Length: 101
Image (tube, rainbow, N blue to C red; front, side, top):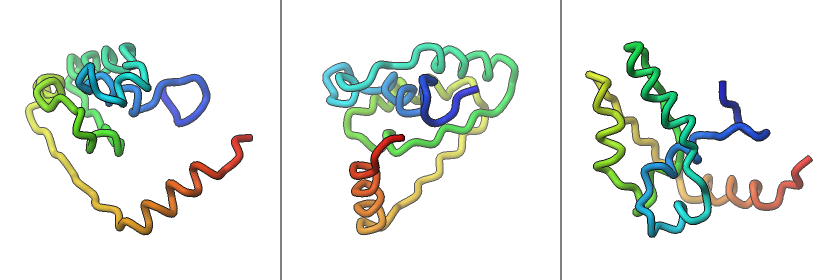
């Protein structure tokens, strides 16, 4: 039910739920409690969940909280993707300089 853009929360807002209270991300973005709760509903139904965000790489992530959140799923697979610096830099530059329509 959530898509990028609009007023709907995205995975960044969910990732913020796992940030330490003093982290910069936690102070800039509000935790999307409704997304957090939907994850529990998905687990209760024994369905899969796929979370993808660059925000999980921040030093302010509370790994224990994230681990506890994922505990209801018996099999958890973590995929790490490394984006080359210049590819990442180009993407960030375009995001910062694109005029929102």
